[in-house]
Length: 512
Image 1: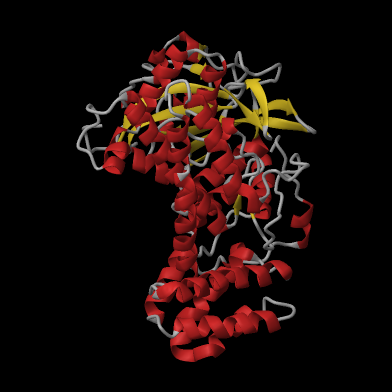
Image 2 (image 1 turned 90 degrees about the vertical axis):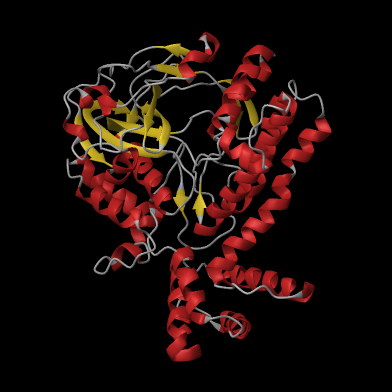
């Protein structure tokens, strides 16, 4: 977007590059009428970042367009086709069963695709209704923006529309539509689809498309001013390596904030390394590496502690899809194995920040000490099921206060443990290590790595119940807190407290 002044949605320039790829990639269609649509909530921050006017929602026709009831001028609605592995098993053709791609617009953030979720059935709905219920829509809206607030790569959510339309899942619910925004919604499954069909021409077209989308990142990754001198194989291998590095960073960030995705199928994996498709997600309460947040995941495939391994498995599915374009299996494996070297470095970076350990310790002995220190605290947290987010935030505050109080500043952290002896033993080692640090800088770093506010299930549930009776105030309140999750927000301490007892009965599944 060339103009710096805020614009209306209808004033943005549509490019629709994905729509121009051809009929093999998508089906053209419009949304199905949503009765009596009403605005439920919107992200003021995202609208501002996109360069939209403050009152962009009040422009004539926008509510109808973002309900799926009308088409904005310049938009080319479609649903894309893809395939994928679901719970480790090849599922064959899938596709946008609930998503309607409106097109790509130029924004202050750069080119962004706009997509509606819940706008009705598509050719890929597989006999489903193509609708999203209010419950799952509120969850995705809040978590998309919460992840952005945490600095984690994610698709975004611009707004939500509600409707009295009845939708049936486990029970009777009402419909809602969310407007999602991302540089691209292409998934690993798009590549798997054309590889499975042995449609090399379409796979080549798709690859060239994502290589162009990632051109700047690739140039920086390869330290090249341009890519024209590289062959398709060379660019594709560099792209796979870059994707592996992005996922190493993403997984370390998920683990660092205790985020469980819940359904890491290859059709839910963004080709750009974004967190996407928020279904049965959860930010852990009590720390448990074996925690399963998805009640549909009966084998625990996507449990918290296994997420980094699943990401690597999914990357190899992507690599297999590229095999028909890259005639060198060893080179593909080498490119993807970059994940294994970057993940430990990214994890160390994340947890060094969470622990406030900024000074490198010389020699192998120091490295072993750092590893044992992290594993030691995670083990005692797991054994006593200490609240993950509260522990890290209290530890941050303790280091901040230790400048005046010394070791006594850690007493509030000890109080989190029913049997504090093991934690006290770890704390002695940690305190000795902190003496080599600038406590002020360590505390500052920790407070920037350990959020006070995360989107816990019970906070989501409270917002959902209020929204069901037409009250969006809790959504707005959470949006304010979660957009700046590392700040204190005096007066809202209850939102950072332990979950209530009733939260244990909240169940999220693939329908969530």
